[in-house]
Length: 418
Ligand SMILES: Cc1cc2nc3c(=O)[nH]c(=O)nc-3n(C[C@H](O)[C@H](O)[C@H](O)COP(=O)(O)OP(=O)(O)OC[C@H]3O[C@@H](n4cnc5c(N)ncnc54)[C@H](O)[C@@H]3O)c2cc1C
Image 1 (tube, rainbow, N blue to C red):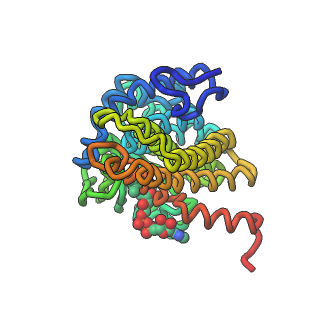
Image 2: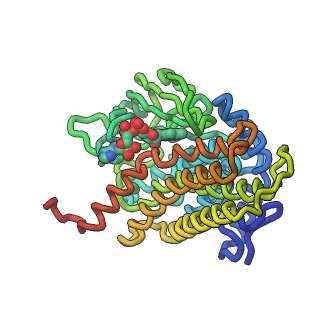
Protein backbone atom coordinates (compact mmCIF):
# COMPACT_ATOMS: atom_id res chain seq x y z
CA UNK A 1 0.00 0.00 0.00
CA UNK A 2 1.38 3.43 -0.89
CA UNK A 3 2.21 5.69 1.98
CA UNK A 4 2.72 9.05 0.42
CA UNK A 5 0.15 11.73 0.42
CA UNK A 6 0.08 14.51 -2.15
CA UNK A 7 1.93 16.76 -2.69
CA UNK A 8 4.89 14.51 -1.92
CA UNK A 9 6.29 12.59 -4.86
CA UNK A 10 6.89 9.00 -3.62
CA UNK A 11 10.46 9.12 -4.94
CA UNK A 12 11.15 11.73 -2.27
CA UNK A 13 8.95 10.36 0.49
CA UNK A 14 11.03 8.78 3.22
CA UNK A 15 9.76 5.21 2.92
CA UNK A 16 8.89 5.35 -0.79
CA UNK A 17 5.89 3.67 -2.33
CA UNK A 18 5.02 0.12 -1.39
CA UNK A 19 6.27 0.32 2.18
CA UNK A 20 4.30 -1.64 4.77
CA UNK A 21 3.08 1.10 7.06
CA UNK A 22 0.12 1.30 9.38
CA UNK A 23 -2.76 3.70 8.65
CA UNK A 24 -1.62 5.76 11.65
CA UNK A 25 1.91 6.03 10.24
CA UNK A 26 0.56 7.10 6.86
CA UNK A 27 -1.62 9.70 8.53
CA UNK A 28 1.27 11.10 10.58
CA UNK A 29 3.64 11.17 7.61
CA UNK A 30 1.02 13.05 5.59
CA UNK A 31 0.60 15.49 8.48
CA UNK A 32 4.35 16.09 8.64
CA UNK A 33 4.48 16.53 4.87
CA UNK A 34 1.72 19.14 5.06
CA UNK A 35 3.95 21.37 7.24
CA UNK A 36 6.99 20.87 5.03
CA UNK A 37 6.59 23.67 2.47
CA UNK A 38 6.14 26.32 5.20
CA UNK A 39 9.13 24.96 7.14
CA UNK A 40 11.21 25.07 3.96
CA UNK A 41 10.15 28.66 3.28
CA UNK A 42 11.35 29.78 6.74
CA UNK A 43 14.55 27.73 6.85
CA UNK A 44 16.78 30.32 5.17
CA UNK A 45 15.87 32.99 7.75
CA UNK A 46 16.57 30.78 10.76
CA UNK A 47 19.84 29.80 9.13
CA UNK A 48 21.02 33.33 8.36
CA UNK A 49 19.95 34.68 11.77
CA UNK A 50 21.03 31.53 13.66
CA UNK A 51 17.63 31.88 15.33
CA UNK A 52 15.31 29.23 16.74
CA UNK A 53 12.37 28.07 14.56
CA UNK A 54 9.65 29.30 16.93
CA UNK A 55 7.02 29.59 14.18
CA UNK A 56 7.57 25.95 13.19
CA UNK A 57 7.17 24.85 16.80
CA UNK A 58 3.97 26.85 17.09
CA UNK A 59 2.66 24.93 14.08
CA UNK A 60 3.78 21.60 15.53
CA UNK A 61 2.08 22.43 18.79
CA UNK A 62 -1.17 23.45 17.08
CA UNK A 63 -1.12 20.21 15.09
CA UNK A 64 -0.65 18.12 18.25
CA UNK A 65 2.71 16.87 16.99
CA UNK A 66 4.65 17.81 20.13
CA UNK A 67 2.88 14.83 21.70
CA UNK A 68 3.93 12.49 18.87
CA UNK A 69 5.93 10.17 21.15
CA UNK A 70 3.81 10.60 24.26
CA UNK A 71 2.02 7.28 24.94
CA UNK A 72 -1.62 7.19 23.86
CA UNK A 73 -2.66 6.48 27.46
CA UNK A 74 -1.26 9.92 28.33
CA UNK A 75 -3.00 11.70 25.47
CA UNK A 76 -0.27 11.56 22.81
CA UNK A 77 -0.02 9.80 19.46
CA UNK A 78 1.95 6.94 21.01
CA UNK A 79 4.47 6.88 18.15
CA UNK A 80 7.06 4.13 18.53
CA UNK A 81 10.71 4.38 17.52
CA UNK A 82 10.05 3.53 13.88
CA UNK A 83 7.12 5.89 13.48
CA UNK A 84 9.08 8.69 15.09
CA UNK A 85 12.08 8.13 12.80
CA UNK A 86 9.88 8.30 9.68
CA UNK A 87 8.35 11.60 10.83
CA UNK A 88 11.73 13.02 11.78
CA UNK A 89 13.20 12.20 8.37
CA UNK A 90 10.15 13.70 6.67
CA UNK A 91 10.63 17.00 8.52
CA UNK A 92 14.39 16.84 7.89
CA UNK A 93 13.73 17.21 4.16
CA UNK A 94 12.35 20.69 4.78
CA UNK A 95 14.26 22.17 7.72
CA UNK A 96 17.18 20.33 9.26
CA UNK A 97 17.34 22.54 12.34
CA UNK A 98 13.67 21.95 13.14
CA UNK A 99 13.99 18.19 12.74
CA UNK A 100 17.21 18.02 14.77
CA UNK A 101 15.91 20.09 17.66
CA UNK A 102 12.63 18.21 17.62
CA UNK A 103 14.67 15.04 18.07
CA UNK A 104 15.77 16.26 21.48
CA UNK A 105 12.15 16.86 22.47
CA UNK A 106 10.87 13.59 21.01
CA UNK A 107 13.56 11.48 22.69
CA UNK A 108 12.66 13.14 25.98
CA UNK A 109 9.23 11.54 25.52
CA UNK A 110 10.25 8.28 23.81
CA UNK A 111 12.87 7.24 26.37
CA UNK A 112 10.71 7.58 29.51
CA UNK A 113 7.77 6.35 27.43
CA UNK A 114 7.97 3.43 25.00
CA UNK A 115 11.62 2.57 25.74
CA UNK A 116 11.19 2.56 29.50
CA UNK A 117 8.25 0.16 29.14
CA UNK A 118 10.73 -2.43 27.82
CA UNK A 119 13.19 -2.05 30.69
CA UNK A 120 13.38 -3.93 33.98
CA UNK A 121 12.32 -1.99 37.07
CA UNK A 122 11.36 -3.02 40.57
CA UNK A 123 7.61 -2.64 41.21
CA UNK A 124 8.39 0.39 43.41
CA UNK A 125 10.50 2.04 40.69
CA UNK A 126 7.88 1.26 38.06
CA UNK A 127 5.15 2.84 40.12
CA UNK A 128 7.24 5.92 40.88
CA UNK A 129 8.20 6.21 37.21
CA UNK A 130 4.52 6.06 36.21
CA UNK A 131 3.68 8.98 38.47
CA UNK A 132 6.71 11.09 37.49
CA UNK A 133 6.41 10.57 33.75
CA UNK A 134 2.74 11.48 33.90
CA UNK A 135 3.89 14.95 35.01
CA UNK A 136 6.21 15.35 31.99
CA UNK A 137 3.71 13.97 29.49
CA UNK A 138 0.93 16.23 30.79
CA UNK A 139 3.10 19.32 30.37
CA UNK A 140 3.63 18.44 26.71
CA UNK A 141 0.09 17.34 25.86
CA UNK A 142 -1.78 19.98 27.87
CA UNK A 143 0.61 22.95 27.90
CA UNK A 144 2.66 22.36 24.74
CA UNK A 145 5.90 22.28 26.74
CA UNK A 146 9.14 21.71 24.83
CA UNK A 147 11.92 19.52 26.24
CA UNK A 148 15.62 19.69 25.29
CA UNK A 149 18.31 17.04 25.86
CA UNK A 150 21.63 18.59 26.86
CA UNK A 151 24.10 15.74 27.46
CA UNK A 152 27.38 16.99 26.01
CA UNK A 153 30.02 18.39 28.33
CA UNK A 154 33.21 18.43 26.25
CA UNK A 155 34.49 15.37 28.14
CA UNK A 156 34.37 11.63 27.39
CA UNK A 157 30.93 11.44 29.04
CA UNK A 158 28.76 12.17 26.01
CA UNK A 159 30.64 9.46 24.11
CA UNK A 160 29.47 7.03 26.82
CA UNK A 161 32.99 6.48 28.14
CA UNK A 162 32.94 8.28 31.51
CA UNK A 163 30.45 9.53 34.12
CA UNK A 164 28.90 12.94 33.48
CA UNK A 165 30.60 15.80 35.30
CA UNK A 166 27.30 17.53 35.98
CA UNK A 167 26.06 16.28 39.35
CA UNK A 168 22.74 15.86 41.16
CA UNK A 169 22.89 15.80 44.95
CA UNK A 170 19.92 14.33 46.81
CA UNK A 171 18.32 16.86 49.14
CA UNK A 172 14.99 16.94 50.94
CA UNK A 173 12.19 16.83 48.36
CA UNK A 174 14.41 16.85 45.32
CA UNK A 175 17.82 17.31 43.75
CA UNK A 176 20.46 20.03 43.58
CA UNK A 177 22.10 20.24 40.14
CA UNK A 178 25.55 21.66 39.48
CA UNK A 179 27.64 21.64 36.32
CA UNK A 180 27.82 22.75 32.71
CA UNK A 181 26.49 21.44 29.41
CA UNK A 182 27.75 22.46 25.97
CA UNK A 183 25.92 22.33 22.62
CA UNK A 184 22.49 22.47 24.27
CA UNK A 185 20.15 22.66 21.28
CA UNK A 186 16.97 24.67 21.99
CA UNK A 187 18.88 26.75 24.54
CA UNK A 188 16.68 29.62 25.59
CA UNK A 189 13.72 28.07 23.74
CA UNK A 190 13.07 24.91 25.76
CA UNK A 191 10.68 24.89 28.68
CA UNK A 192 12.61 21.99 30.27
CA UNK A 193 16.13 20.63 29.83
CA UNK A 194 16.40 16.85 30.30
CA UNK A 195 19.86 16.79 31.80
CA UNK A 196 22.03 13.69 32.10
CA UNK A 197 24.05 13.95 35.29
CA UNK A 198 25.75 11.77 37.89
CA UNK A 199 24.44 11.23 41.38
CA UNK A 200 26.71 13.11 43.76
CA UNK A 201 28.27 10.43 45.95
CA UNK A 202 31.82 9.36 46.83
CA UNK A 203 32.34 6.59 44.22
CA UNK A 204 30.73 7.64 40.92
CA UNK A 205 30.29 5.45 37.87
CA UNK A 206 28.22 5.59 34.69
CA UNK A 207 25.67 3.37 36.49
CA UNK A 208 24.92 6.42 38.68
CA UNK A 209 23.65 8.43 35.71
CA UNK A 210 20.42 10.31 36.41
CA UNK A 211 18.10 11.84 33.85
CA UNK A 212 16.43 14.92 35.31
CA UNK A 213 14.31 17.68 33.76
CA UNK A 214 15.29 21.20 34.80
CA UNK A 215 12.81 24.03 34.10
CA UNK A 216 14.19 26.65 31.74
CA UNK A 217 13.38 29.37 34.27
CA UNK A 218 14.86 27.61 37.30
CA UNK A 219 16.90 29.95 39.53
CA UNK A 220 20.60 29.15 39.10
CA UNK A 221 20.30 28.06 35.45
CA UNK A 222 21.91 30.38 32.89
CA UNK A 223 22.38 30.15 29.14
CA UNK A 224 25.84 31.36 28.14
CA UNK A 225 28.10 31.63 25.10
CA UNK A 226 27.70 32.52 21.43
CA UNK A 227 26.14 30.48 18.67
CA UNK A 228 27.59 31.16 15.22
CA UNK A 229 28.35 27.73 13.70
CA UNK A 230 28.86 26.39 10.18
CA UNK A 231 25.55 24.55 9.94
CA UNK A 232 22.41 23.60 11.85
CA UNK A 233 22.35 27.22 12.88
CA UNK A 234 18.67 27.25 13.83
CA UNK A 235 19.34 24.71 16.61
CA UNK A 236 20.76 27.51 18.82
CA UNK A 237 22.96 25.07 20.74
CA UNK A 238 24.52 27.33 23.37
CA UNK A 239 25.91 26.34 26.79
CA UNK A 240 24.03 25.84 30.06
CA UNK A 241 25.47 26.50 33.50
CA UNK A 242 23.79 25.00 36.57
CA UNK A 243 24.63 26.55 39.93
CA UNK A 244 22.79 24.93 42.86
CA UNK A 245 19.64 24.48 40.78
CA UNK A 246 16.92 22.83 42.86
CA UNK A 247 14.38 20.57 41.19
CA UNK A 248 11.67 18.49 42.93
CA UNK A 249 11.69 14.69 42.98
CA UNK A 250 9.20 14.40 40.14
CA UNK A 251 11.71 16.11 37.82
CA UNK A 252 13.34 12.70 37.40
CA UNK A 253 12.67 11.33 33.92
CA UNK A 254 13.87 7.82 34.71
CA UNK A 255 14.50 6.09 38.05
CA UNK A 256 18.05 5.59 39.32
CA UNK A 257 20.03 3.14 37.17
CA UNK A 258 17.46 2.98 34.37
CA UNK A 259 19.23 5.31 31.92
CA UNK A 260 22.34 3.12 32.16
CA UNK A 261 20.20 0.06 31.51
CA UNK A 262 18.55 1.76 28.52
CA UNK A 263 21.91 2.78 27.02
CA UNK A 264 23.17 -0.81 27.32
CA UNK A 265 20.05 -2.66 26.20
CA UNK A 266 18.32 -0.32 23.72
CA UNK A 267 21.26 0.85 21.53
CA UNK A 268 19.05 2.19 18.75
CA UNK A 269 18.12 5.03 21.11
CA UNK A 270 21.38 6.62 19.95
CA UNK A 271 20.48 6.49 16.26
CA UNK A 272 17.67 9.04 16.49
CA UNK A 273 19.76 11.94 15.17
CA UNK A 274 20.24 10.16 11.85
CA UNK A 275 16.67 10.48 10.47
CA UNK A 276 17.16 14.25 10.21
CA UNK A 277 20.15 13.63 7.95
CA UNK A 278 18.28 10.97 5.97
CA UNK A 279 15.79 13.74 5.17
CA UNK A 280 18.58 16.10 4.14
CA UNK A 281 20.01 13.45 1.80
CA UNK A 282 16.63 13.03 0.09
CA UNK A 283 16.26 16.81 -0.22
CA UNK A 284 19.66 17.12 -1.91
CA UNK A 285 18.75 14.53 -4.54
CA UNK A 286 15.31 16.03 -5.13
CA UNK A 287 16.89 19.44 -5.58
CA UNK A 288 19.37 18.05 -8.10
CA UNK A 289 16.67 16.43 -10.23
CA UNK A 290 14.62 19.62 -10.27
CA UNK A 291 17.66 21.77 -10.97
CA UNK A 292 18.79 19.66 -13.92
CA UNK A 293 15.23 19.72 -15.27
CA UNK A 294 15.15 23.53 -15.00
CA UNK A 295 12.33 23.43 -12.44
CA UNK A 296 13.76 25.36 -9.49
CA UNK A 297 11.48 28.19 -8.45
CA UNK A 298 13.05 31.61 -8.97
CA UNK A 299 15.63 30.29 -11.44
CA UNK A 300 15.52 30.66 -15.23
CA UNK A 301 14.06 27.44 -16.72
CA UNK A 302 17.43 26.32 -18.10
CA UNK A 303 17.65 22.56 -18.58
CA UNK A 304 20.90 20.67 -18.01
CA UNK A 305 19.54 17.14 -18.01
CA UNK A 306 20.58 16.37 -21.60
CA UNK A 307 24.31 16.14 -20.80
CA UNK A 308 25.45 12.52 -20.31
CA UNK A 309 27.80 13.58 -17.50
CA UNK A 310 24.86 15.02 -15.56
CA UNK A 311 22.85 11.86 -16.08
CA UNK A 312 25.68 9.69 -14.78
CA UNK A 313 26.31 11.99 -11.83
CA UNK A 314 22.62 11.92 -10.93
CA UNK A 315 22.53 8.14 -11.35
CA UNK A 316 25.44 7.77 -8.92
CA UNK A 317 23.67 10.01 -6.45
CA UNK A 318 20.51 7.97 -6.81
CA UNK A 319 22.37 4.72 -6.10
CA UNK A 320 23.94 6.26 -2.99
CA UNK A 321 20.57 7.56 -1.82
CA UNK A 322 18.87 4.19 -2.21
CA UNK A 323 21.74 2.41 -0.45
CA UNK A 324 21.40 4.84 2.42
CA UNK A 325 17.61 4.68 2.56
CA UNK A 326 17.61 0.87 2.45
CA UNK A 327 19.93 0.67 5.43
CA UNK A 328 17.92 3.33 7.26
CA UNK A 329 14.63 1.48 6.79
CA UNK A 330 16.25 -1.84 7.73
CA UNK A 331 17.66 -0.34 10.92
CA UNK A 332 14.16 0.80 11.88
CA UNK A 333 12.95 -2.79 11.60
CA UNK A 334 15.79 -3.98 13.87
CA UNK A 335 15.25 -1.54 16.74
CA UNK A 336 14.23 -3.29 19.96
CA UNK A 337 15.48 -4.10 23.41
CA UNK A 338 18.45 -6.49 23.55
CA UNK A 339 18.94 -6.63 19.77
CA UNK A 340 21.10 -9.48 18.50
CA UNK A 341 24.67 -8.69 17.57
CA UNK A 342 24.05 -8.41 13.83
CA UNK A 343 21.36 -5.77 14.45
CA UNK A 344 23.64 -3.82 16.79
CA UNK A 345 26.45 -3.84 14.20
CA UNK A 346 23.96 -2.82 11.52
CA UNK A 347 22.79 0.08 13.67
CA UNK A 348 26.36 1.45 13.83
CA UNK A 349 26.74 0.87 10.08
CA UNK A 350 23.44 2.64 9.37
CA UNK A 351 24.28 5.64 11.52
CA UNK A 352 27.71 5.93 9.89
CA UNK A 353 26.28 5.54 6.39
CA UNK A 354 23.47 8.06 6.82
CA UNK A 355 25.68 10.72 8.38
CA UNK A 356 28.51 10.34 5.88
CA UNK A 357 26.33 9.87 2.80
CA UNK A 358 24.10 12.85 3.58
CA UNK A 359 27.15 15.09 3.39
CA UNK A 360 28.57 13.24 0.36
CA UNK A 361 25.25 13.61 -1.49
CA UNK A 362 25.09 17.33 -0.76
CA UNK A 363 28.66 17.76 -2.05
CA UNK A 364 27.82 15.78 -5.19
CA UNK A 365 24.66 17.82 -5.66
CA UNK A 366 26.64 21.07 -5.68
CA UNK A 367 29.27 19.68 -8.06
CA UNK A 368 26.60 18.31 -10.40
CA UNK A 369 24.32 21.34 -10.46
CA UNK A 370 27.14 23.86 -10.71
CA UNK A 371 28.04 27.32 -9.46
CA UNK A 372 24.62 28.95 -9.40
CA UNK A 373 23.28 26.13 -7.24
CA UNK A 374 25.39 27.14 -4.28
CA UNK A 375 24.10 30.68 -4.09
CA UNK A 376 22.57 31.65 -0.75
CA UNK A 377 19.24 32.25 -2.47
CA UNK A 378 18.87 28.48 -2.92
CA UNK A 379 18.63 25.79 -0.20
CA UNK A 380 21.43 23.53 -1.43
CA UNK A 381 24.33 25.29 0.26
CA UNK A 382 22.42 25.20 3.58
CA UNK A 383 21.74 21.49 3.13
CA UNK A 384 25.46 21.05 2.52
CA UNK A 385 26.45 22.94 5.69
CA UNK A 386 23.76 21.27 7.82
CA UNK A 387 24.74 17.83 6.54
CA UNK A 388 28.33 18.38 7.69
CA UNK A 389 27.20 18.29 11.35
CA UNK A 390 25.75 14.77 11.37
CA UNK A 391 28.99 12.79 11.62
CA UNK A 392 30.14 14.93 14.57
CA UNK A 393 27.27 14.19 16.91
CA UNK A 394 27.97 12.12 20.00
CA UNK A 395 27.59 9.49 21.24
CA UNK A 396 27.66 7.81 17.83
CA UNK A 397 29.93 10.02 15.73
CA UNK A 398 31.05 8.46 12.44
CA UNK A 399 34.43 7.77 14.04
CA UNK A 400 32.95 6.13 17.12
CA UNK A 401 30.67 3.97 14.96
CA UNK A 402 33.78 2.64 13.22
CA UNK A 403 35.48 2.12 16.60
CA UNK A 404 32.49 0.14 17.84
CA UNK A 405 32.09 -1.96 14.68
CA UNK A 406 35.79 -2.84 14.63
CA UNK A 407 35.91 -3.75 18.29
CA UNK A 408 32.57 -5.58 18.56
CA UNK A 409 33.00 -7.51 15.31
CA UNK A 410 36.32 -8.87 16.54
CA UNK A 411 35.60 -9.43 20.23
CA UNK A 412 32.75 -11.22 21.96
CA UNK A 413 31.32 -9.71 25.17
CA UNK A 414 33.67 -10.39 28.09
CA UNK A 415 36.71 -11.18 25.93
CA UNK A 416 39.80 -9.36 27.18
CA UNK A 417 42.18 -7.27 25.09
CA UNK A 418 44.93 -9.30 23.39
C1 LIG B 1 24.30 21.27 15.56
C2 LIG B 1 24.62 20.53 16.81
C3 LIG B 1 23.64 20.36 17.76
C4 LIG B 1 23.93 19.66 18.94
N1 LIG B 1 22.95 19.51 19.88
C5 LIG B 1 23.22 18.83 21.01
C6 LIG B 1 22.24 18.67 22.02
O1 LIG B 1 21.10 19.12 21.91
N2 LIG B 1 22.57 17.99 23.15
C7 LIG B 1 23.80 17.49 23.33
O2 LIG B 1 24.03 16.87 24.35
N3 LIG B 1 24.77 17.64 22.40
C8 LIG B 1 24.50 18.29 21.24
N4 LIG B 1 25.49 18.45 20.31
C9 LIG B 1 26.84 18.00 20.63
C10 LIG B 1 27.29 16.77 19.92
O3 LIG B 1 26.51 15.65 20.21
C11 LIG B 1 28.72 16.47 20.35
O4 LIG B 1 28.77 16.33 21.74
C12 LIG B 1 29.66 17.55 19.98
O5 LIG B 1 29.59 17.78 18.60
C13 LIG B 1 31.04 17.06 20.35
O6 LIG B 1 31.96 18.06 20.08
P1 LIG B 1 33.39 18.08 20.77
O7 LIG B 1 34.26 18.84 19.87
O8 LIG B 1 33.26 18.48 22.18
O9 LIG B 1 33.78 16.56 20.74
P2 LIG B 1 34.94 15.82 21.50
O10 LIG B 1 34.38 15.14 22.73
O11 LIG B 1 36.12 16.70 21.65
O12 LIG B 1 35.26 14.70 20.44
C14 LIG B 1 35.82 14.99 19.17
C15 LIG B 1 35.75 13.75 18.36
O13 LIG B 1 36.61 12.76 18.95
C16 LIG B 1 36.00 11.51 18.96
N5 LIG B 1 35.88 11.02 20.33
C17 LIG B 1 35.29 11.62 21.37
N6 LIG B 1 35.37 10.88 22.48
C18 LIG B 1 36.06 9.77 22.14
C19 LIG B 1 36.47 8.60 22.84
N7 LIG B 1 36.20 8.44 24.14
N8 LIG B 1 37.15 7.64 22.16
C20 LIG B 1 37.44 7.81 20.84
N9 LIG B 1 37.06 8.90 20.13
C21 LIG B 1 36.38 9.86 20.77
C22 LIG B 1 34.62 11.64 18.35
O14 LIG B 1 34.61 11.15 17.02
C23 LIG B 1 34.36 13.12 18.35
O15 LIG B 1 33.65 13.55 17.22
C24 LIG B 1 25.22 19.14 19.14
C25 LIG B 1 26.22 19.32 18.15
C26 LIG B 1 25.92 19.98 17.00
C27 LIG B 1 27.00 20.15 15.98
